[in-house]
Length: 485
Image 1 (cartoon, rainbow, N blue to C red):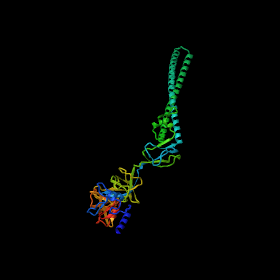
Image 2: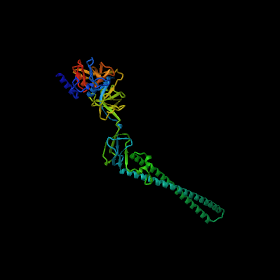
Image 3: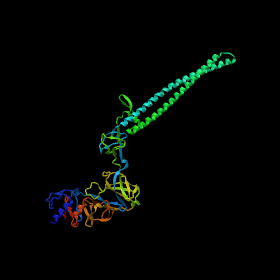
Image 4: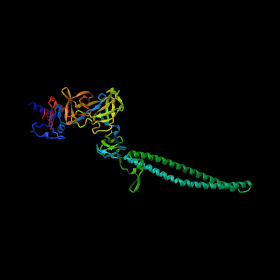
């Protein structure tokens, strides 16, 4: 009766289906299931009665996993809680460069490559900018055409000026000759007077031509200054257009065919396309398709999932041993849950970076680590623990996870896998030393590299509690029997 009660109790604790299995072979023949090497799953117990058989079917039913004994610096390790978050540069908000109606081209959580179109904007402001560009270009063309006319005009004035100079030279010679005759007592006064009048008229005409030439020169210079100003205005407008369209100036000015005409590209753009600057994932939207947005509206947020960092809060009292550049390890937060999906060894490493400020109320200081290689379980907001070894010169100790230690009353118990037979474990009283809340030192009984039961240890402890000297064995369905078969 005692044997039946114990079996029912073990079955409820192990949470596996209990079949009415007898050891006389009348039950379904689970004992004929073989491991590699042809051994029976239910074998004869060896002389050491602390050994327990755990063939593959048993390990699968009980969810047994193992962890290796490894060397760690328990006393020199600080452990603090924290969580993952995006690096400041991992998040990009795309806002509308000009007001307009938005048409979304992506879905939430969609992966996008660099250059992918996120949304399009139908904007009156863009068409106004196009109009200003067209006016600036037209003004430049007009001024250039005007400047081209100044060349022939100035050449004509130059020729006119030269002819007038020739006339003046002729009349000057005529006046001088007549004056000489007059002094000699000859010549007529009317001729001298007329010659002097013609000379004066020629000189007046030359002055007018020179004045007109100066005006034309000034107008040409003025037009050249106007071209430079118009070109500067056009360049500023092109810079505005480049900021709006995310295209370079050369791309905007590139010639394209439209209606049989060669036009600059900026004049053929109907709607503004906003493209992703980096590869990432669409995290959220600020509005829906068809909504009106202004320059302050965040339309799409794209994040880079691989740009994560770990933020933790350390005690200010530990600042004496903490410093930038220390080796740090990010470990999963829940090493005690049986059947967990995150392995205790699936951790991440990096260098410690202390925050610039502390919290005077909480008496903490921020600690940051950028993992050298991200694991699959790293997500923003996922909590974990940060381990920092502040003295790497200290002697290491043999350690195992504290979760691998079971308590049989007041006695700490571990189950070591037999090196010569992976289908057996030995129940051992754990000779424990110091612990840091996650790892505990083993003072004897194990060597580096030994495998210790992690998940499933509690079931093994229950099945062997009070029967250490009797030995026992598991059936393939997870039920345990005391004694030899």
